[in-house]
View 1: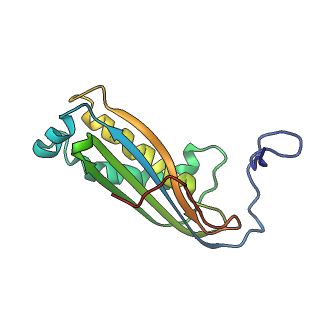
View 2 (view 1 turned 90 degrees about the vertical axis):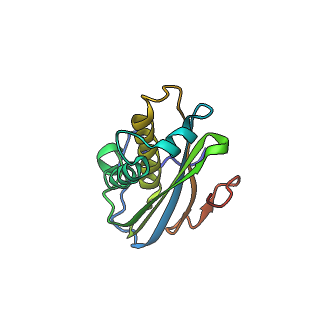
View 3 (view 1 turned 120 degrees about the vertical axis):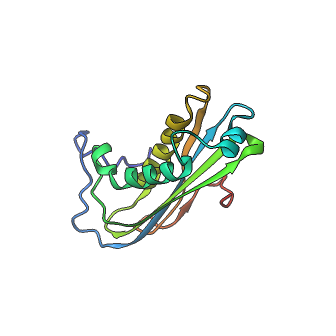
Length: 164
């Protein structure tokens, strides 16, 4: 089993000590998939929602969540995010919204959790805004697509295609 970085030598939960790590450029991209019942997404895309601009609200929620990650993930470090981007790709023919969040920093630790938290929260926001239309909406997955920078270097999920 790989070393669990949040467990100390005595098996206790511990925040990783990044005191001596060098700051470097780091980036992570995560995706959430939101599945709609047949026809519901097409209707929303054509008619909109009374609550407002679905994509704008989800984008803001994703950015805000990425910035708040240390308050939500107990062992997370406060990170000086330099950029968070939330992209939403509607796939009406598949009854699917694809949300991708990219987080960047120049810091001593990575931004994977920020990207994942942003994607998950954007997906939950979409559910919240659309639930009156269809309770059967599902958040199918939230996953890390790729990361770069830091001591562990670059990583890409093996089954990931490019955006859209």
